[in-house]
Structure formats: structure tokens, C-alpha cells
Image 1 (cartoon, rainbow, N blue to C red):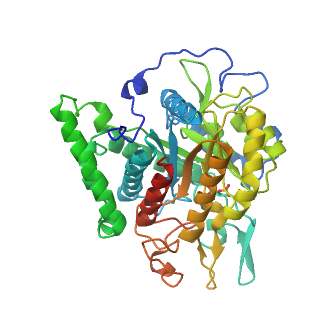
Image 2 (image 1 turned 120 degrees about the vertical axis):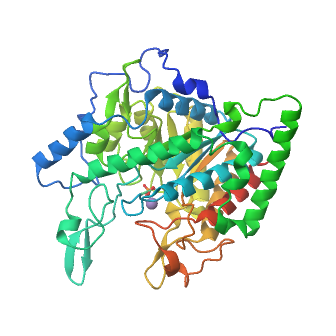
Image 3 (image 1 turned 180 degrees about the horizontal axis):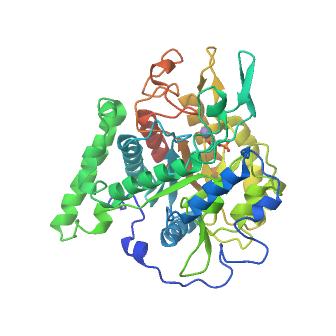
Length: 475
Ligand code: PEP
Ligand code: MN
């Protein structure tokens, strides 16, 4: 019955409406004990080492004058969609590079990820029969936490590469210096990326009558490509039927889509500089991205990252591995979402299939017992990274699929909603993860291993995963 649903929660009118309707103490509402800088009183894990405070001030002051990248009204409409997903009416699809990079940036790179996500969302819509909320790890996903502060090569130690927003991957001292000016370059690249995404999502590219054109050349010849084509044909038939009975298929619900951005809230000087008070509601929003998440390595209860995010109005995420106990999770939830507002907080579970089967039931039980409203999603990639004998960081499609299966099984047992997936992926034909229909092996990894950090699923692997999830969602 839901075969005609557009793969989005498109409500274009709300994008423009800036009406202030907020009752007091909504997320982001000003309070005496928080400011965009109050994180500075707390311990900063994984922070950069800027040597010259004046150089840092100059960069932060430049950013403070830059226009917001996202707008409060957009952030609120994402929040509303996530709130519906919390009650089982929606599924969150997050995807994109592990780390965006200055050298890898071009229009095609952004477009390819965007269009695989459109394809995945179409497939998932059929499976879930509910709105798919699309959020790119894009337009701000630059800073990386690292397990080692230094990298040693041939007896020489230099600071680890922490993403282009902090330093440069090349192994020499000036490149590895933490350079505040990189924040400005990252801001400008993010502005370009958002401009491309806005054009693609509203300017006709995402029109449902074009969905055959979303197929990527290298996916076309595969089994997934032809399955996708069958889906697209079904949708075409449905559209023709609707047109025949008088439905206006040129209305925005068919021609536009909502596409949001998110990144790890890691580099606090950058986030602070882009945090602004919304003129219509007075609430604080971090205007660097629609949604921000705190990583597994920086989610300490008394740390700077939770201090920063608790005061912003954006929807938040937090990554959780097997190291997080149910008690700790409840305290994290109480810090990040003290008013227990649905849609405010997404728990991103990443622990590998076996640990997930062991640990997730207890976490869900605690959340249910305490009556907390959260959206549970699975990041099936970060708990499954390993090095090959040749020292290449990779992930296997089988392990990723096993973690997803475990995630869905546990939610079935617990009666909770498996609310989404978070993936490191690209639309490009890279060879960074092994397995799946794409047939990448450990031996062929080096053919097109382009990532600046963790290995990404390529377009075929990402689409294959969407089919697997869709099958699982179909009741
Ligand atoms: C990431 O998402 O790239 C990341 C570093 O994840 P995590 O915090 O889960 O390790
Ligand atoms: Mn990563």
C-alpha cells in the first residue's frame, strides 16, 4: 500500500517557515551555565595542539564572521523527522566518507555519494514502507580521532594525521603541524559541498521520474544494478498510474527531496565558531551541520565534547561500543537529552556482531526501564576494521552484514525499533572493503584504495547492503 511513498520526508513548505513556536527550555535554549565556550573548562580528549594562540584566534574570528552553513529551520525539520522515527515511523540512513579530504573534493565525488544514497533510500522505502531520512557524512566530516598521538616511520616520530581540517597526511613536520587555517579551508569546502547538495536535492536531480538515471555506470552491469532497475521500473509504473488518476506528479513531493548533513563533533574551536543564536527563537544551534555526533573516544561524561553538545539545539548522536555499560549509557542520555525529547538523541551502536548480541540487549533494557526516548541505529563498520597481512586497513562485507543481522535480531527480541544505519561509503568504484557482489579481495584492495582514513564501501557494496536491510525491514 505504501509503494508510492517518496523516499523522503519531503515537506518543502516547512523548509521556508521560520515561525517561532517553541515553548521554554527546548534544546538549545540559553541557560546560565552553558555558553559556546564553556567546553574550555573541561578536559578535551583528542584535541589538536595549536602552538600559537594568536594564530588560533585569528582563524576562529574569521569563522565567526562566516555565514552559517545550515539554518535553524532545516535543523528543526530534521529533528521532527527523527522524532517520528523514534516512535517507529522512519528509518535513518547516514552515509559518506570516513574523512572528507581537500584533494578528493570535486562535484562528481559529492554527486556520486548523493545518488547512491538516493538509490539506497528508494530500495529502503520499499522495504520499510516508511520515510527514509537521508543524512550525509558530508560538508564537515574532516576531523579524526586517532589511537596514537604520533606516527613513527623509520625511527622518525611526527604527530599523527588528524584529518585535513587539522593537518596534512604527508609525512613531514610542516605538513603534520596542527594548522588553525585549515579550519577555514574546510569551512569553504563544506560551503561548496552544501551548495551542490542543495542544488541536487531541490533542483530536479532528485525528481522521481529520473530514478533510472541515478544508476551508476559501474553498478549497472551487476545483479544489484538490475535489481535496482526492476525497482525503478515499478516506481515508474506507479507514477504513470498516479498521473492517470489525476495526481500531480510535478508537485515538490515527487520532484524534491530532503538531504541533511552530519559530522563528528570533534574539533571544538571550529564548532564553537559556527554556533549561532537563532534570531527567531533565541536558541543556540551549531550551524556547521544539521546533526552532530560525539565519537566513541570523546564521549566522557565530564569531558569537553558532551559539555559542548548539551547546549546546542541540533539533533545529536553518540557512538557506543561494547565498552559502554548500561549505567554509563543512561548517564550519557541524561546529559545529552535531559528533557527526554524524542528525536534529540540517536544512539549509534558499533561493536561487531558477537559483542552486539551480548551487550545490546542490556543497553536496550536499561533504556526501556528508564523510559528514555532514543533512536537506535547501527554503525556496522567501525567494529569490523582489521589489517591484512600486507598492512592494509580493511573491512569484510560478511562481517558488516553479520553485525547488521545481529542488530535486527536483537531489536526483534527486545521489541524495539531498529531505526537506521550509519555507513562509511562512497559512490565511487573504490576497492577498500572486501567481499559482496563487487568481488573485491584482499589481493585487489590496492587497485583503487583511495580513502584518507577508514575503508569505505563502494557504490555496489552500499547498494547491496541496502537490499539486505530492505529485505529485513519488510515485515
Ligand atoms: C568515525 O565515525 O569515523 C569514527 C571515528 O567512529 P567511532 O567514534 O565510532 O570510532
Ligand atoms: Mn571512520
